Image 1 (cartoon, helix red, strand yellow):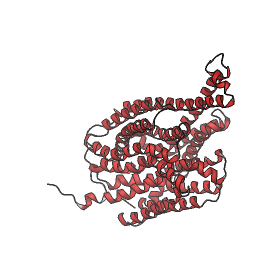
Image 2: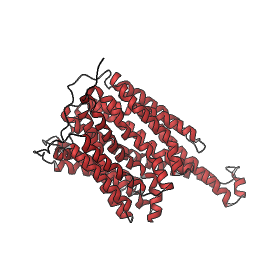
Image 3: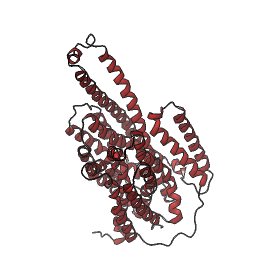
Image 4: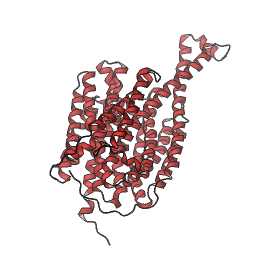
Length: 507
C-alpha cells in the first residue's frame, strides 16, 4: 500500500489558485459580448464605436502576452501573478465606474494588460509545480478555467444584464481578484526577489507587438473597411513583414522576448497547429450560436446563455477525465477521437435552420464539446511536456499567443465571410421576389396583402439566409477538424517517459 506525502499533494491548492485567475481573465473575454447592446443603449454610442470595447481588449491581449516571460524573469512569476490579479480587479472596478464610452474603452485597454499576463503565468507555473506523473490530471483541472469560462460567460452575463445591471459584469471580478491575490500569497512559497535581471529584447517586442496588432486590427475591421482596401492590405503586409523581422531578431539575441526555438520541436509544433484547430472550432461556435439564437430565433440574452450551458458543463466533466486518460494512454488517441467527435458535432450543426429546436442545439453543441473536452488539454500538454524545462515559459507564451490570435482572427474572418455570403444570398433571393408573381406565383397572395405581406416574406428570407450562412461555416469547421484529427496521428502514444521530479518554482 502506497501513501501520498505532503510534497506530492501540495501542488493541488496552488493549482486551484491558478485556476481562479485563469477563469477570471478568460471569462471576461466572453461575458462582455452579451452586454454590448445594453452598454450601447445606456452610453448612447454607435454600433461601430461600441465594438472597440471588445476590439481594444483583444488587440492589447495579443501585445501583452509576449512580454510576460521577461516580466516573470524580472520580478518573479508568482509575484507578477499576484500583482496581475490585483491589477485586474482594480481595472475591472474602473470599467464599472466608466462614465462614457471613451473612458470605458481606456479602462478596458488597461484591463487587458493583466488579463493577458494571467493565463501565461498560470500555465508556466503549472509545469513547474506539478510532478510529471500527475501532469495530465493537473492540466485537466487547469482546463476548467480555459474552456469552461467562455461557455458560462454568456449565461452569467445574460443574467446580470437582464436582471441587474451591466456594470456587474466588471464588478464581479473585484472580490474574485482580491481573494485570488490573497490566496496566492498564502499558498505559494516566499523566495527572495531575483538579484540579476535579464536584458529586455526591445526590438523583438516592438516587432512582434506591431505585427500582432496590425494583423488583429486588419481582421477585426476588415469587413467594415473592406478586405481589398488600402488600410487593411497595408496592415496585413506591414504586419507580416514585422513578424518576419521579429523572427530574424529572435534568432540573434541572447534573451528573446518569445523564444521561437520552441518551434523546432516537432511535437510542440504539431500540438500548436492542432491547438489552432480546436480554438477555431470552439470560438467560432461561441460566436455563431448566440448570434443564431438571438438574431434568427429571437431569444433573450439569458435564454441564449442557458441554451449553451449544457455544452459548457460537458467540458467541466470531461476535462479532468481527459487528463487521466492522457496519463494512461498518452495524447494521440484522445486527440484523434476528440477531433473526430468535434467534426461530427460540427456537421450536425451544419443542419441549422430557423426552425431548429433549442433541444437539438443543446444536443449538437454538447456532442461537439465532448470532443473539445476530450482533446484540448491532451493536445496542449503533449506539446509543452515535449519541451525542455528551460523552454517551458516560452512554450506557454507561444501557446497563449496562438490561442489569442487564432480566436480573434478566426472569428473576424468567419464573420466577414458570413457577412459577404449573407449579402450575396439576400441579393440573389431578393431578385427572385422582385420579379413578381410571374416568376413566383405564391408571391401573388402576399402582394395582395400589401407592404406587410411582402415584408413578412423578406424577414423570413433574411432568417433563412442567416441560418444557411452559419450552417455553411460549420461545414468548413467540420472539415478543419478532420484535418486536425489526421495531424493528431503524429502525436506520441503511451505513457509519458519518466523524468526527474519538478523543481521548486522560482518567484
